[in-house]
Length: 192
Length: 192
DNA sequence: ACTGTTACATTACAGTCGTAATGGAGGTGG
DNA sequence: CCACCTCCATTACGACTGTAATGTAACAGT
Picture: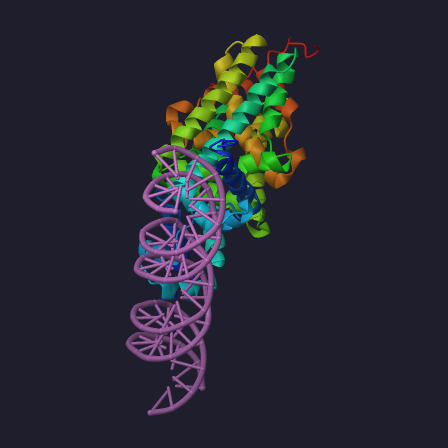
């Protein structure tokens, strides 16, 4: 074997194709042939790499969750900044402001719909939510908020509304500063 | 004509069936035959009352939006209470705490997914959002909040996260009081 | 060289989809 | 009585669905 495949390279490409189709299309899960066409492969290849369509979709969800979580952790650990700036960076990373983040938001929304009845999908939601909650709570604690975990919960919930408002009403519909003003202690300075 | 049909009685029944199927099923739009079975009619009847499936779905969306808006207005105008109590009542009305409200939340979520690319569905989102925003802003103004419309925007956004948290993590995952504490002026008394 | 495995491509199939087409039952107006 | 309209039920159709089945080319091990 000359240069061994990173075993999930194709699978990741397929997962990206699913994300692109989900936010370009009508929010419903695309068909196998559509996924194959977008990924530039055939349905036979899909069948080879994924046992069933649900396996494919679950992998796509996991893929996007991991990618998003990595970006969030990167933003959280990025340089020395005020807690407010870190929170703003984290939340902004979740807003659908470009195609990649729009795809991730579409993926998240589509899979939440299914998580209501399917436990496998619900587990991913909880895991992703816990990561976000942890990162937000950490920053709120750093800012000296009286109840960091409560503030993190509220901000995490508000983020979901901001995502859809940003998507359907435009980026001007979300005022992140206004949210942070009400969640951070008033004496916190946001310089440095 | 002895007692004329209220022309949309059947249509409303169908729309209710769509709501039930949406929150019971996997979040995807049900098929025509499934809708017909749930509504207790045949697909021929559906074809008679709706030109196409999208017409049916748009009517269902409109139906649930109107129902929800009516309930929100009723809660808003209900008796003399503190602004905080009114806000809590409005938000609680939106949480999926029983089957009816869960159906409405499912309908809203499914249609938001489609609103991203379909203008007809997006218009309903904006209209519904405007009604909610108006009611919330009114109460925030009554409470003497410094910027009622900003507070209303934030609460409306947080509601969406609370809806999904309530659905996927259980009702205990939402702490409405914590949200209102941060959005209402601290000197506001919530008695009477 | 033979064997086996991996990684696909192609084809086929049973089922579901939305909807068009047809027919009929019941009331209504002339 | 008869045409007519509304309100449906039934059937049918072509497109599309996920997936099973089969073939095949490349490569690895022995």
